[in-house]
Amino acid sequence: MANLKAAFDKAVADSKNLPEKPDNMTLLKIYALYKQASAGDVDGKRPGFTDMVGRAKWDAWNTIKGKSTDEAMQEYVDLIESLK
Image (cartoon, rainbow, N blue to C red):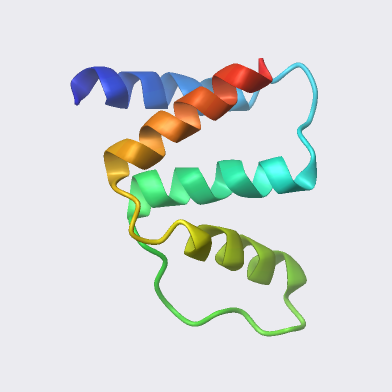
């Protein structure tokens, strides 16, 4: 677990220095995996129609509801590594 947490923390830092900005779908996946790994399942109400960015983020996070923290961390690390 400690190794995975360290790898996750490094991937979070690396995500800020990617060679090029990922497309929006990839950014949403990065966001969703980060939130699932750090906060668990999405809670609260889905943002309204006028908050399109918030709604897209909520939807992306909600699609991976139930994924374990370790799974989300590992997928986040793998995704960031693939974008380097």
